[in-house]
Image (cartoon, rainbow, N blue to C red; front, side, top):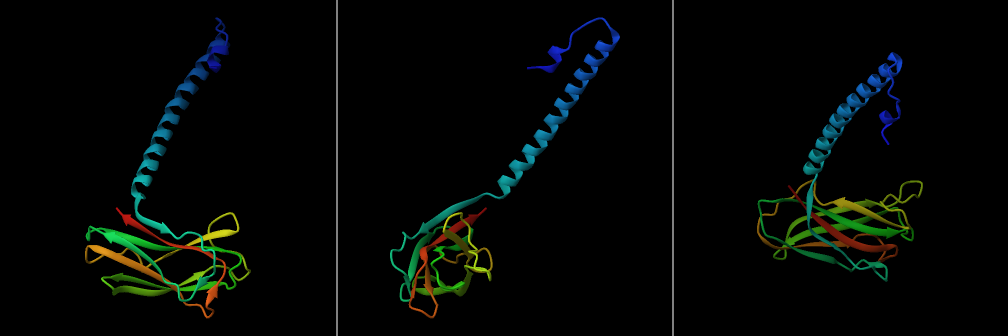
Length: 188
């Protein structure tokens, strides 16, 4: 309902003055509000356009019914078609509070034609010093992502690559790890 329609129109100078002031205030707010909305909209579109990433390959393992074994090597194979593109690769780990340690060491290798292109050891901090889970999530299962390499990666050759993951902890069998996966994102 329009507030201006409630103002009685009379010939007295006071009412006419109030009516004129309200009408001017409404027109100024509308113009200012439109400008603020337009500027906010443009900034939002620009930020979203700059932050867009396209997932090229994403795979999570099905929930593991048994503990993660030291001899198990998780292999993710993906195809690189365009060698001019730049990618980020993240390893993704889902875990529960049943995990017995505060951290997890994973060996990560990227292979091309069975030759090692890249390798490192990642230290996942799963629990802080007070015992609180550090991953993202609201339930008893948390998700933790870790970047492979020091930033964006560029592949030399087109073809099939494999990312292999293996835990390096002192015990053979690790309970509490429910899924392991990778996320490869193309940077525009």
